[in-house]
Amino acid sequence: MNVSVNVLGSSASDAVGMIGVNKWYGEFHVLRDINLKVGRGEKLVICGPSGSGKSTMIRCINRLEEHQKGQIIVDGTELTNDLKKIDEIRRDVGMV
Image (cartoon, rainbow, N blue to C red; front, top):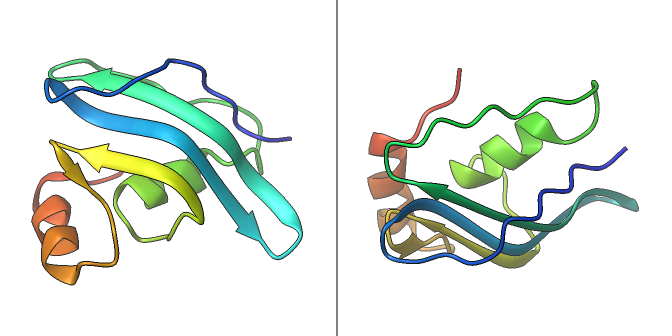
């Protein structure tokens, strides 16, 4: 089973934006075209069965996992391979 969230777009006022995000582990397509917008101060629950990609999606937002396709924008900063930007994001993003 794959995570599929369909809330489109991302703007500067969003805390987190994901646009067309995809993640594979070999042939296994874990995250398929994820579009997500989380506003500042908004609380969001990610739920689903074991193995559906919940933790992988959160780990991608914190750049503990690298996504292969799409954009992830946290607090106005797009996550790329720039280690300085990743360190900045990790100061404010955590997972429980």
